[in-house]
Image (cartoon, rainbow, N blue to C red; front, side, top):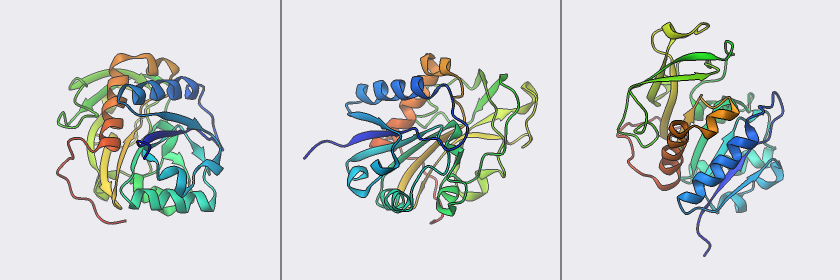
Length: 231
């Protein structure tokens, strides 16, 4: 039987980030270093039960708008409910805007951002592979995403927050989640709002962040002891 692999999905039906090619190349490299075969696609016809059944992880890399067909939605939901791993990066928070399951999976929706600028990420948990490599206060430049609501109330485990006092344009106040994870609907979900710029995918710290996130969703390393409600 072939070993599980990683599928990186980059379809956009809205704004398209220039960083997608660099991000996809980085993720293929990082997955390969973990021993996974990795492939990229923008074709919604590739999101099938048969294809996802071979995946240790599915990555949505800055996907925007409605990127799945109805059969693709059914296949993706079955994959997650069957224990699949899902890594959502940056504008993936703005994908599938009219699909409740996807919104519930992430716990919130994208709600705009200020201009690209430096700020500080406050890392609250270093016991998770996705944030273990990060400093407690991480100086970073990005689009600092705002969200329609704080996802904390949906049962996600918040791993890192934005310090809104260090940049302009934040809307969530002193508790502004940026990175979180959950075990819900049978699968594992990790979201990072970071990753706007092409240069991020060459940055060693950000690559370590993605490596830990991918390792957790794909291999189930170090599960956080945090229950989540059923979706």
